[in-house]
Length: 410
Image (tube, one colour):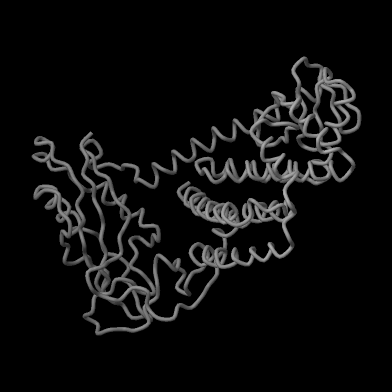
């Protein structure tokens, strides 16, 4: 579950940055088809990029060996009640919270197709048009069908159906299926909802443009939109004929001067953004570690040198996520009784060295909270079982590491 949460966060960052690019450079252009495909490509890219693994050779060290810096392990939270047992780490707690949101957003998403199915079977279907027996004024398209109230007069209904059929012929309902998947996966990401809203606006601009091209008088068409602000459902999967919040922008786009084809050259600016995102989330050095987490060190110092980052980092019980070490800490640490009585709590940063044999040596408090808590953390790290030592060019070396231990009273 932690892997899914991390993937969702990385995917969300990709989508947010690409939407900001759209907002700054593309949104005001009248090249609606180009803008639509950019947003679709952004969603696909954000979903795929964190899954890719691109091996590269890094030229030179990103972090120098030795010095004060060291690899920072995930924080371990220790409470009085959890002493001697296992407590969920921060990443595990966030993953559970993400899972709960994922379940809720999935349930909300499923509720619309269920409601839509009832309309489908209760209405009178003619081809792709469903006339719904309802006194409420509804007109929207979803999943390749047009839903319109039987109470809408025929003369107006035909023009509205024509508009909604433009959505279907342009494949807008397929765009919304992709948007729905991304929004559910990234339910916590505001950019996902902003992309959805932007894409729906582009759908309306495209459909309006096609209607005007097919002979609709612009004044009469705008009057129809104004008089038909329905209470249609606002969901991930539907395009509503007339939505009040979009009317002003739709009227503006109908009369705006067409953007020239050279404006598409702005898309070239998006390429460095995509390359940067690929490098951050997809590129790995040949040691298999992500580039930002474990950069390669190309020069080997004397054996006594303490490294901060090497080609093969030390591992506790062969666990690359470091969760095994966190679990060991939680199972063995003792919350000092005197500290608990005095209400003392705080965060202790302990730095230690994993030597060439995998032994944990020289534990040192680099950021203390209280002498009682500091000593408890030091005593625990000094008892750590043996690690698999770090290696640089197949030579075992000393590597400095740091673990934050957060002592918190219930």
